[in-house]
Image (tube, rainbow, N blue to C red):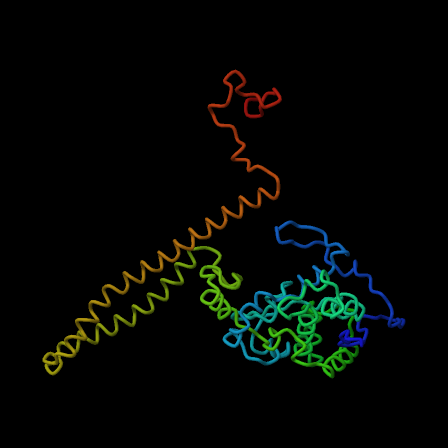
Length: 365
């Protein structure tokens, strides 16, 4: 019995002009990016024989899978709203190539990963996406899918998100303008593909991340800080302060706002102490005393907490940066110039003014 998953669609939305047969094999090399960053932060050219890892990198949402039990805090279990509605509520579409940021929003921006050409080609689904989740796949092919999750589930969910984003022709025009879909796709072909995909759509077949639509970045950061322990970094730093001065200014701005309310309360208490009825009220006297002490100590504690938190962040970032620098230079096979720079006591006085090959140095000419 053949248990191979069926194609989610057979419509060839990318075909142009002459009709193509169902057995046409796409030129995968033309669909890969010119370069990509690997786990060691090296810039390499993607190889066709390494296509499976490329698709995994382009589709998997492992970081969101790790907090799937908390996604209800970050968004509702509903499809994303169409592009025209995103514009209507004042959100700017910001392009990202990371699937982990797709449909994540912050303030007036929503991050969207463009729909790649290869995801609209049935041959790619048959040869690379569905084969990774097929029961007959080999162990090496099946290494992409972990914890009962498959590459096909991520691909189906990603494509499903676009069927929700591009619902009207106005959404289609916005998507073309923003570069979210290939220009070779027409409105008629997109309608046909969407209709065919939705006829066989099942939520159980998509990655659970795509049960939710738009996710709020500020809450994702909180989930990652407190549920995962990433106190300083959170989920993503795209909304973080670029300099520490701005971080201090914003935090002290909040503190100043709170202190303004404290001043109002203290002024009211001072007026109350001048009223005969409240002067003899022991409860009011105790409250005034306690709040006065609180108003003196609280700003000092809060200010010290803000400065201490920023200093801890500086130290943490410095330690992480130095550790990364050491590992990175090791992998690059180079020696930092400040370590290989000769000290003054190592310089031969008789050769002062000459470089390592005996020629007169530029500074002495």
